[in-house]
Image (cartoon, rainbow, N blue to C red):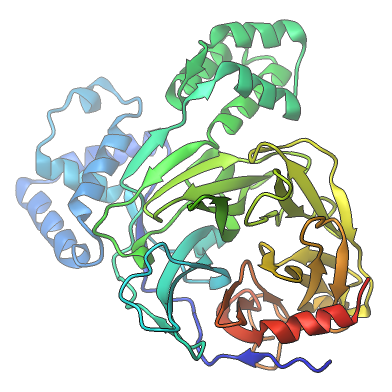
Length: 490
């Protein structure tokens, strides 16, 4: 294949020094024991311990005092003995107790991989041939819990990427806003997943007002559990409602954080074991209106749930579940509507590439359409997408990942018809990228993988992960790629 791809000499590697302050949770009995031990310290011991903590941690976190105070409030909200609950805590005691229920978590310690790239909403102060960009990554730390992290920079006319200085003080969102649920829509979604007998469903339905927020949902469910929790089937169904309800939320970061300091860490019950493989894109609604979306997979340790993240500024993010028949890993949204409808690449069977359409970006109830199956030796195990399609004058370029013998991942491409993207009008006979000698060694050997690309100066910019450990990027002339794709028409 006469197609030249240029690997760039820039690497994004895990950095164990980048730590986030998380709540450290233990059983309620142990919480009472710890608080009692802290209160039993002498005044001098409390002061000395708190001073040591401030010396050791105040330069590692933005306002660590606020973190400790918040974690004290979260801890003391549990059910405690009268003595613990009614004790009049001094400010220093609150901070000290909060510190005992705080832990540092190195979000990137294990891996920094599966990147995507989009044009930044801020395109000011640039020279000719430059674009300001935002890259997203899947960062993995202790316990293989994944989160979404960002880097920003400028890509110049020579396709070289200049990364902005990376901030040291990682930040979880400052504000959390509950989603307002409409009862009719919420119970319609519940019935798509699981159901129980009609009598019990009516009891639950009558419990809820026409609109409610998550905290109200929690209260209603726990009230129902107190009455019906002994019935295993009913209890499981109530748990499912609680699980589904926790998947809608909105988060906001402080304006004085750099984008590299913002971490989208698992918040809801549906994603407590990780947020995986965000595929970011800039979605064009026409008439100058656009928004950034990202599809990602939430994992709670047992079940996966595809979710949709949206933002206009990378400061405030809205998160919602994606319902319907595409509900599996690796969904990738087209960057604009096709014939007035949303379109999504997906892989519902873990093996083949599919496409789906919907009038509602959150609900995909129509039958999925098979796009392509493994055809070449290097893709016999499975196919998938590497992010959202790229629009060109000759068709939609879709980068695909394939798995072949020895579980070796490769990246290739197909070309879809612009107006009828169910039709493949071109493909490659060989992959664009195989893992080379340096890229094949890592946490999961022999893997190259991307979650999203962009076009700059007539070249395709392809950020990609190396063996589920670190990341880099490569470039390829877009017209050369199109010519090669059209040589092998389907």
